Length: 281
Image (cartoon, rainbow, N blue to C red; front, side, top):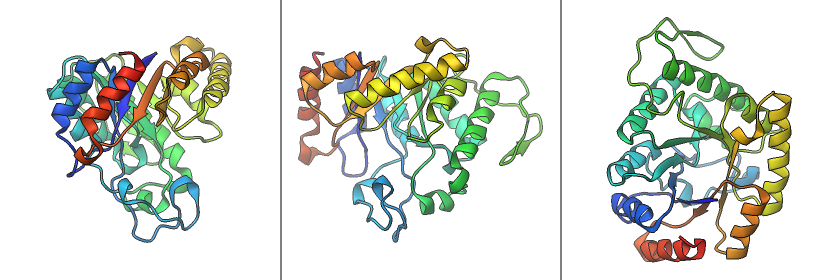
C-alpha cells in the first residue's frame, strides 16, 4: 500500500515547494490538494449535508489546487500529484482539460485527477454548476476532457456543452489520460467508476467501509465486463494509528492518504516526519 499526504495550502501555510520536496524525501508516494473555489456567507447546507450548518473557515482557506500542484511539480521528481478532490461542475471542461494536461506535461506524467461533484448548492450555482444534476454534468465534462486528451480534432454536442471540431494542445503525457478517481457517496458511484474512471477515493472511511466498498466496486466492474484489478482504492483518513494502517491495507486500499495541517503553528514539517515514521517509510 502506498502512502500520500493531503493538506490545504493557503497564505498562512509553510512553503509548498519545500513541503512537497520533503514529502518526496521522506518516501511518500503522493501529495494531494483540495478545492473549494468560494464558500457562501449564508449557506443552506453545511458540511455533511446538514441544513443550515455553518461552514468552517478552513473550507475557505485554500489556494487553487492545480496551481499549487504545479509548484509542487517544479520542486520534485517522482512525487505523484493529486486533487483531493477537484469539483468538476465548477469548471468549464475545455479550460480545465488544458490546465490538467499542461500540469501533466510539466510534471512528466505525475498527475492524478481526484473528482468530486460538490456538496454545497450555492457554491456550485455561483460557478455555473447544475447542482441537482451535478453528476450528469460531471459525467459529460469528463467525457469532453477525454476527447480533448485523446482525439485529433475533438468535437462535442451535449446537454451542457457543445463545440465544433477543435485543435487542442498539449495532450497529457499519461496515456490515454491521467488516472481519474471518484469521491463522493452517490448511489451510482461504483457503476460510474466501472464505466469511466480508474478508482474510488472515499473520504474518511473506516476499514470496514473500505472492505464493503471494495466488494461493491468489484461487483460493478464485473457487471461492466471489466477486470476489477484495474480499479484502485485510495482512502483519505485523519488517523495516525499504525494498526489502522494495516487494517486499511487488509481491507483492500491500494493507497492511504493522510490529512494534516499545513501551518507552521501546527508544526507541519515535524508532523510530516512523524507520519512517515508511523507509515514505516
